[in-house]
Length: 625
Ligand SMILES: Cc1ncc(C[n+]2csc(CCOP(=O)(O)OP(=O)(O)O)c2C)c(N)n1
Image (cartoon, rainbow, N blue to C red; front, side, top):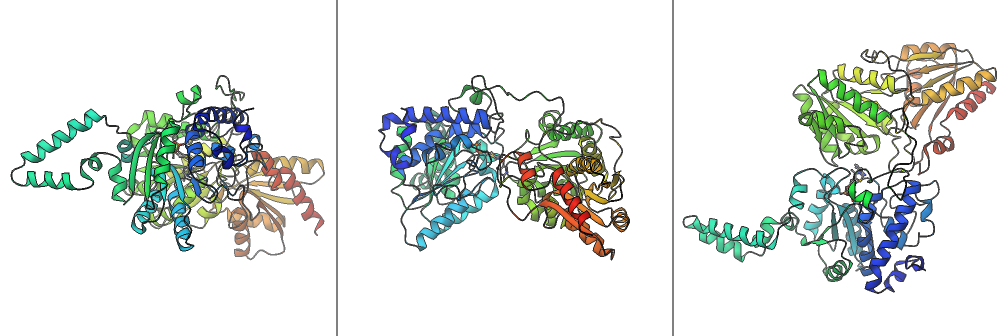
């Protein structure tokens, strides 16, 4: 029997001797590779954090001690050690174990995560609450160097250092975000100093200071006396000590004995502490060590070879179509600039980055900054295209409003992963964007029905002199013929795809194909429908919608977005503004709930936003005379 099979809680882990722990680590790695190769998931981050999870649970007493895993994408070992071993094979499946930490899943998940860089703020809140409740248990936030590129992390550090709470931050530094990490902090962290180098450097500084006439010797004496002295002057500790954190490290995050010793010592302190741990992303699985970016988050693969087992599709993804189109457009327009927030691969911009390094900016996990940065570029006559997943762009709502929309700056938002994304679940579904974009004055909001329309919408966006968003889904495109790519779509114009007298189906984005399937099914049942691809959520084609609504007063709106404030709401407002009455309308969209993890198609059926749901709505409307 393996060690892991006997562990049902951290108390069982504590029964093991230290010499057993490396064997346990390799058992955990094997389970992770096995399950992720079948279900997909975040492989490389988890393999890098196995020893960290073991050491933390060996030393601390969860769930009294609170452990917060930033992003939560590296918490699989933590899940295996905290009573979820038997259900782990259900990882990321509907009703199974979530790919991130969830308070509702386990008392050992101290905070729900998915979006980056929240752990220090949440940890500080918990530490402050413990202080008010006079509890002495500990709070540990584990955060990656990638997550440290977000401003939110520094807001947390800044307050923590000020109010001096009992908070342990463990910086899991693997020199990688999804792609290689970016930014000035990253180069500070990756500086490793040999003892010899340090000696020589100190001597050089000493000589330099002493060589300064008069003041030099005094400064040298002062520097020598000061607690920080040279160590903080030239190590990453400098930064964290400036925030009033006690800094330890960097230490090797795969050496269990060392980790456990230092955590046992740190546990005795009652002030803000930062432990800097270096780890290897993908540790222990050669394909992931070799290609940590690819194995950051993967679909199913062959566990023996690391090779993708999905069938090669000749149809590109929407992301690829976007990336290739922007690359092509940038050839003839040197004002086009691409901006990504730590996701060059995910947003299809790798080729752009290679071809136009000067016109490509990876701002780190800093969506807010990325949007304001783009606004700055736009004020100077450039055409920034901000490519960010719908869910992460939620962070930058105020920047879109305040820095882009008020002055109607021409920033293009390429909103990838709009709609249900599937296995990543509630934190990652892009089902709010039509509503949040729609609420902003000066904003144009589009969603293509297929990849050909995506290209035309990008042409439209780059020709438009104001803020404009194009929202497209995760996954393979429709596989349609590409035509009229350079012809922009007139802003606010929809297109009638089918004509019929019984019901009017108004659809947007990928819901258009569901509407067309529904149209065929309804035809077979003797019901004729008009299907409109509305293309724009804002401005709506109010003339077209108004005139059709007068002719066919049984209306269905369809969108892969929450119903609140979305496309259907826009249609209702439009009909009411035109004083149109006497119609029946069903809004099909995501009900007022968070959509959990599961496959995209399963969830579309579960939440009633697919073709059968449209057919049922049509029948209900026809019965309701
Ligand atoms: C706000 C936000 N933007 C983007 C992401 C996508 N994302 C998930 S993990 C990750 C990289 C995190 O890097 P790091 O913190 O160093 O952890 P590692 O994966 O290297 O262990 C990114 C960009 C996210 N989860 N949240």
